[in-house]
Image 1 (tube, rainbow, N blue to C red):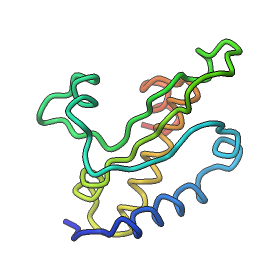
Image 2: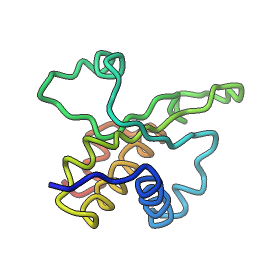
Image 3: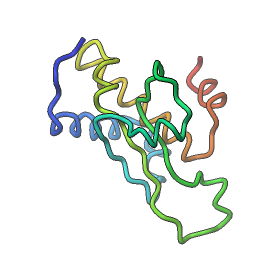
Length: 125
């Protein structure tokens, strides 16, 4: 189990993860804020119908590209990483870096309109 990670260090890990992800997918993201917060809000958990024993590492909120149908005036999409669950899931700093990278990739895949089944197959699971 890891100790605390400062907000500044956590943001640095996010920046590093973004730099390491495949450029063609990351560079073509438009109008998406990548943020983090300590924990999912009760509203976010309720919206996803999460049970108490389920953990949320990241969340994509927005309109996936395939569903936009040419609309341009759409609020910015948001990818939120949840700092405390990510830290709890990581064995050490290197593992935390991997968890962050994997979570961003997973949420970016939702932005592109992929469902969980398609994401898992791309990840080789």
